[in-house]
Every structure is written in structure tokens, then in C-alpha cells.
Length: 372
Image 1 (cartoon, rainbow, N blue to C red):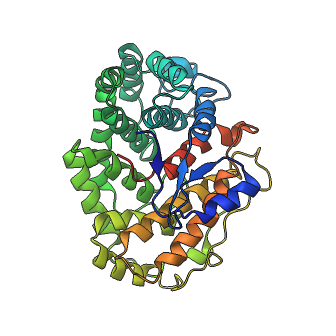
Image 2 (cartoon, one colour):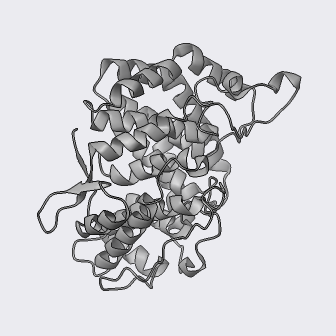
């Protein structure tokens, strides 16, 4: 895979980026061509991950202490995923490197990415991760971090490379534990979690469905599909006008719609969306949904809104793809996706660690949508 199209983020995004962030994307000249992630931008994203996956501090540990023996430095508690400020960001930082190395196998950053992955994804270090999980709480990184771990494993399995196959086999026991924890949890979860942060079930469910599309963990996949129907088939009138909350990085309404387009066939999804988000315009209009605005990118919570713009962009694109061809809402969805992509990608950089440790992963997820 040398270059990856982002379905339906249309070519006029390139003109917008040429003013705000040169060389973010490259596009082919056809009128309906989509922007493409180029090697230079992939290198910048990879550099963000490489600068943090082995950076131990600052660090936010979400670790339940049950005794003195549970106190330790991040590298001791989480031998593989101790960097990037927190466990889940370290996991998806590793995913970013795998994803981009698969996409641009001859790029200058790939040798360094391979070396970093090989240092962290070893049998000894993954065994240490399992030991920490075994003595910790069932709620650890549930569902967000566990879902990202499954996505990391899926991309390693999809990488046609001997070293990647070895790393996938090494990671597999930790993946199995993550899947088992989610499966134990789902029957006991009586309602969806509709927050705009890590606890949101819709985004985690979408990650799990993507990760298990290769046939892995069929029981978990079936449970997520069933729970998605249980929780959301009857939902109506999602209050999108109340979004965003001040520190959201995923949209409760759009995240749910992006999930349900994976659950329902297009005509059924179109009917469901009529009731769930009835005010989507029936014309090409980007003004109906304004991007989030960050006034202090050094504040880790306020900077979440930069990630919200990226996640909204991929959700809007996904919703458009889930509708039948010719649905009159598609132009408005895609126009809003372009607007949010512009705002989100323009904020991805290394100036503030509050965003630098994770926004590259969200940008990569947006710009490599639709790839295996």
C-alpha cells in the first residue's frame, strides 16, 4: 500500500489546506478525486508517535492501588505501553506507526518505527503488561484503551511482514485478555455510555467492529453488534445542538450514527437516521455544524476539541458512506466533514505535548479510513 484514498473527502479540501497547512494532503486532478495522505505528512505523524512512545514522563497513570506492591514507575507497571502520557495513547501511538509503516513501507521514518516497535512489543514486555492487568481492576482502560489494543493487533495481522507477524503473535495473549474483559462487561452493561470522552461506548464499539472484521474474536463481534442494536435502534432526536461539551474529543451523536451505519444495511440506516438526526440539511452546506474551537492548546482537556474535529470528520464521512447512493443528506455530511478535517488537521503538531501525544493517531485514523 503506497497511497491511501480517504473516501469522499473531496478535492476542494486541498485548496483550503494550501492556505492553512501546506502539503498536508495531495490530490489527483480529477474533479471528484479525494485527497490522499502523502509520505511527508505521514512522516510528521510518525515523528509525533516516535517522540512519545518511549517518553515516560509526564505520565498520567490510571492504576488502582491495592497495596504497596502496586506502586511503581510507568515503565515497570506498563513495560510496553508506558509512554505518550497515558496507556491508551501509547497503544494507539504504536498503532499509528504500524499503520503508516504498512502504508509507506519505503519512507524514511519506517526503519526507526520498526526499531521502536521491536523494542516495545517483545514477549517479556507483553508478559509484564499481562501481569499488571491480572492484578488490577476490571475497569482498566475499558472500553477505550482495550478497543485500541484490538485495533493495534488487527493492523499487525494485516501487515504482510515477517517481523509484524512475530509482533502480532507476541501481542495476541494481551489481545485475548482485552477481548475477554469486554465480553465479560457487555452482558452487565444496562445502558450505553454517551459521553464525549474515553468512556463512550459508540466509538469503542466501532473500533472493535473494525478490529474484528478480519474474523478474529467472532464472539466479541457478535456481542458488540447485538448490544449496538439493543442500545440504539429506538434512539430518536439526538441533541446535536447541545454539542460539543467543553472537553469532548468524540461526538456522542455522530459517534452513535457512525456505529449504526456499521450495524444496519443502507436503507435501514437511512430510515434510522431520519429519526435520530432529522435536521441534517438536504443540500450541500457546511455551515450546519461548526467545528470546535481551542483557545489554549497547552491545556490537555481544552485541546480535546482539536481531536473532536478529526473524529467528527471521520464520523460524518462514515455516515455519508452508510447511506444509499443519491441520499440528499450526503452533500451536507461531506461538506461538514471537509470543514472539520480542515480545522482538525491544522491543529496536529508538536508544539504542545497536550495534543502532540495523541492527535497524530486521530489524524491517521481520519486519513487512512477505508483501508484494510
